[in-house]
Each structure stands twice: as C-alpha cells, then as structure tokens.
Amino acid sequence: MAVRSVGRGVHAGPLLGVEGTGREVEFRASDFHRLAGGRIVRTWHVEDYFGIATQIGLEFTRGA
Image (cartoon, rainbow, N blue to C red):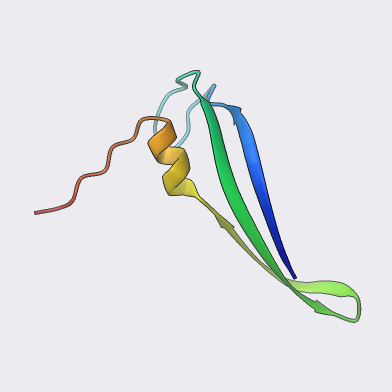
C-alpha cells in the first residue's frame, strides 16, 4: 500500500541548521507499507528534505 501526503507550516525555529525565517513551507512525503494478515508489518517513509531546504534558503553548490 502507498500513501502520499503534503505537510505545510511556518519555519519558526531551527531546522537543518537554519534559524527560523517565518517563511511558509510545504513538503511532500510518501509512505510504503507491506501488509500481512490485515496489518502493517513493514514501513518505508520518504520525505522531500531537499524541497524543505531550498524553501528555507539553503543553497547548494556543486563541488569542483
């Protein structure tokens, strides 16, 4: 089973080494579940940290 979600909030405190900016941020996440006997027996969770990082002002450069 797969579940997609969107989270929204305000960057109000330290996150990824960046002090709160007051910016509104949005991120997407995906969860994949293995089911057995009608129960979740294993879960994989993925969040878009790169998307969050760029929204709060982190800049990425390519190494030389």
